[in-house]
Length: 399
Image (cartoon, rainbow, N blue to C red; front, side, top):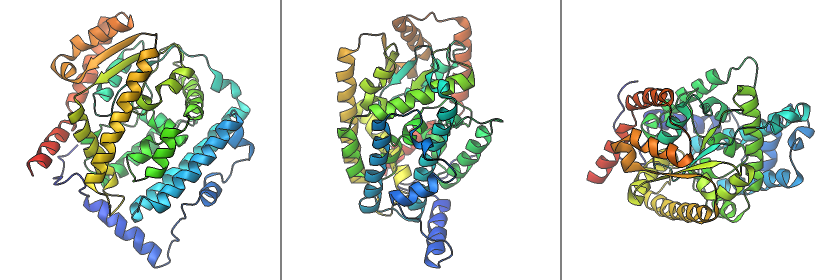
């Protein structure tokens, strides 16, 4: 992977993003391609094409079906009235929402014919909880490297619908190549790989949980509604997907290591699905978390809206991170299972010692085989571009 281009400002755009904005807008202005409406009925028509009505409801309760419909309505309203998307942002929103509708129907079609997949018994998961940018990805991948554990492939999170032959790694690899072209700083923000262990944010996005959307768009109406709403329907869908994924990947007997920053907000709903889960709680200095989070979100929002504002974005994520921390602390006060705590600075200083205390807290033997696999993962991560993100943040402050 080559060197990164300069990133002079958190909201900086790559040339490819600017070209895409101009090209898409020209297609619409000249009437070559119609601008797709971000209206629920239109998106539903596109996303559900080729599926049966029963595919929407199969395996799901009435409240879950209604929840998805309501989320779509409110998210679309926020996108139309608040987000101020440019042509690239509008196209990305259209693509993500029609994809969510399509995958939801495809999952329902499977559960309509093979309902047992969504009910597969699984080993108690290990859940990495914490703010984004707090070392959760590193801890997630180290734990998942243990051969006795399992992790979710990025391509499976991106598309949870199993297929044979499994072309998902190829499709996800192509999607990542396009994403890296439009945002060349992507790997510095979060190292990806189509079959690499990654967070299950794609499963949450498929149920229209806010995590992936609020990190791209200014949608305060949808965010406020989501924060005030019960996330139980989202995690019921999440649990079905996890059970099916474990069945189709053949790892149902191994603890799946789960991770997504959204869990911090929704921990009771997640634990209601997996009451025997063990928790790994990651912590990092709040100021460092904020500046790193703002940099990540700005990288996404800056290319999708011409009115993205760094001050507004910083204030929102200061609020959001404080809210998530409150939710973590409240949930932990009543949780009676195993909990390990991970400190970002200690993880940097001596990751093997930190892993050893995590295993002890979770009452899991730490084998030499596990340590060897983790060292290979650590070495792989050390060769990535993520260290460039710290330099970018330092340059933002200096400038």
